[in-house]
Image (cartoon, rainbow over all chains, first blue to last red; front, side, top):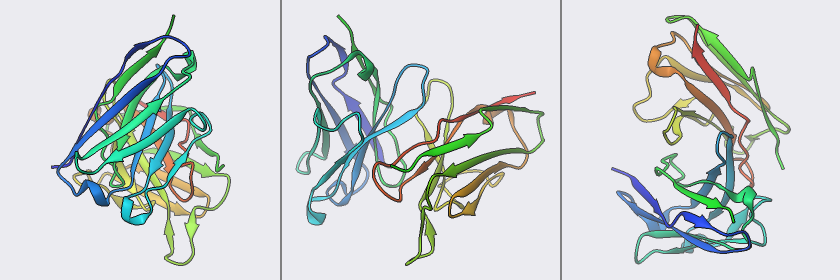
Length: 115
Length: 113
C-alpha cells in the first residue's frame, strides 16, 4: 500500500524557515516524480512544486508562490521528500501535502506563520 | 500558466439524483502525440486529504465507485456523479498536469438538497 506521511510543521515567525519531510513507502520512491501541494485554511488547493526522479534529471519546478523561497529535494536512500521553506510569510500558513504521480496524498502537516 | 475554472461554485442535489460539475482550462490540456487529456479530478471531504477520482480526464482511480465518471477533451471537462450518495458530500477539484505549474480549479462544493 502506498503511504505518505508528512512531518515538520508547526508555528514559525514571519521571515523564518522550516523544513518539511515526507516519508514514503509502498512504492519505488526513487523512480517517482514527487510533488508538494498546500491548502490555506478554508481555501482551495495550490500546487507548490515537483521534483523529478534522479534518473530523469532530478530537476525541480515551482509554482509562483514558491519560486525563490522554497526548495524541494529528495533522499532516495531514506525514501524521503523534503520541502525547505525560507523567508516565510503569513500567507504561507497552510496544510502542506506531499503527493505521488498516482494521486496519493499524505495526511498533511500544518505550517502556521505568525508572530 | 494554465488557469482552471469550475462551475458552479456549489450545488445541492437530492439523494439519488445526478450531480454535474464543469471544469474549463485556459488552454488545451490534450497532448496530441498520445491523445491523452492531462486532467484529473479530486474529491476532498471535510477534514481529509484529497482523493484521486479521475485521471486522464475519464479513467477512474483505484476503488472509485462507477457512479463517478469524467468526460471532455481539450479545454472543457465534466465530472458526473450519476446517483448522489450521502458520502459524496465534499469539495471537488479539477487539476491539469499538462504543464507546470500543475494548477487546480477553485473547487465545487457538493451538498445534499
